[in-house]
Image (tube, rainbow, N blue to C red; front, side, top):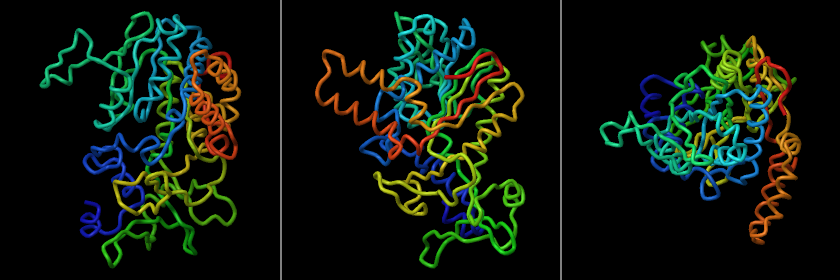
Length: 385
């Protein structure tokens, strides 16, 4: 379809190309039938929750800490944007269930996931089942209310949404976005003698895809290029409006309803490092124009810009970003690792896996510095952990 669109209308923006490759309802990387196999050692990439339960458990600890900072409200909601296979959400729910007061306050869990294929896998991971009050007839699937069995037999309602706008308002909410900012399609601009020009995707003589520059300013370059901050001599920059809009939207909800949010991703905090668009296939980096729909496309998250958009909301406070390694150590990952290693029934293989995963998560040479953490909280008292 991209090829036909370009032949009919001319080159498309990098933003449109990435959007179609990732989110096309039939052929998109996250929407196609085999999307569930994108994740993990057998797929194209591994995320922190897939590496070890330690990561999700510490997010759960942070959630409980923020609930306490909020004054232990009688009702609290959890929202995850981009839940992957559901592993992180499952680890968070298991960890927070060990604090019965928090578990009693948790009213519902909302997963923002447009992919129907991934929703099925998330329900399987969470072991979600229709509630006793819901119809399970195929023709009435929209009326199904899903629940996850909780601590002491208390169930939590779980709902899926295509966008954040569909998530209900009204009570304090804890948000998590783990490796979601990097998935928003970017616009790319290149510095020329005539000013910033947008990078586009066109067809080459063999019918494949190639990058070209717009000969004239485009609406995107006029709107976004004036706000670009670059290193001296940096000739290519990226702007992902969707990532910035998400940070602002979540900040607005936190300001209105109280709560907190964590964003965890690989990225930078400062001037643009240049062209970071790349593709991944079977854990190998490939050209971003190769095999559209079969390759994971990603860019580095601009944490500085995300922080500025979050902080621009009255009633919201932004902390960070800081490195993932520093944050995990501050949250007690070493102490949690030691507790797991002290379990009587732990095997030698599990010991090796836990130690290796912990090192990978915090080591500056691996994920410890490459990944960053940004927190947004309301204007209440106290600062986040």
